[in-house]
Image (cartoon, rainbow, N blue to C red; front, side, top):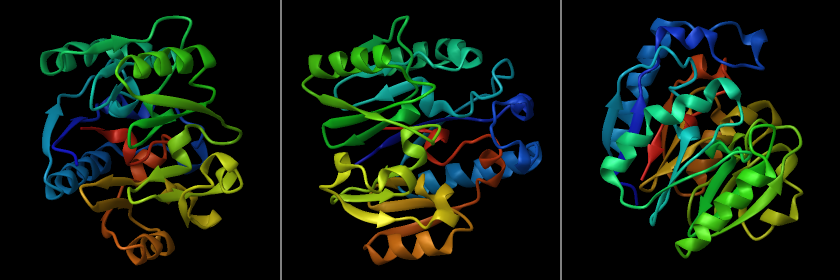
Length: 254
């Protein structure tokens, strides 16, 4: 169960964020702010205390706060983002996490890792090897997890930006899954909730205290998750989709 979340309000520089989805157009800042507030409300409705950080205009992608730290039950790992323009974002969160947590570790060069590539299942952490996360970053992370009695393993990615672009673990052995992961034996032990290809964006959803927050506009996925026994909350994050961001990217939950 989660008790807290940290989010960062997007700055006006959001429109300059990284994106491989230029065909969707630039995000509308005013709409992004409205959607972010709705996202915070959804987290609060799940019982979380939400720490809302001020915008950081210097870093256009800094609202995607999940990528800069992995918060586990035993420790915090400050990441080293693979995107060079995001690398110094960690300096904006490091001191905040050190005020709250005792065990804080840091990924060192040449390792790179973004927490969007890390999926927690109990005390085990699946780590996607992607353009943003390299083997050195993954191996450092696994070593640090082991130090605190946790485990980790790697997954090779082919088409998706981050591991959690195509996977979301919902507890009770339920795994939301789409695309390249459906036939990956790494995940064969899970009960699949398969996302239709046309709704692949909805594969990134978040379990929060027995509710599942899903992106608005993906009715087939919403129905499947609901039929699996979860209470579903829809939040419009269409402006963040334009920057390849999803629901999990917008918060640190612990």
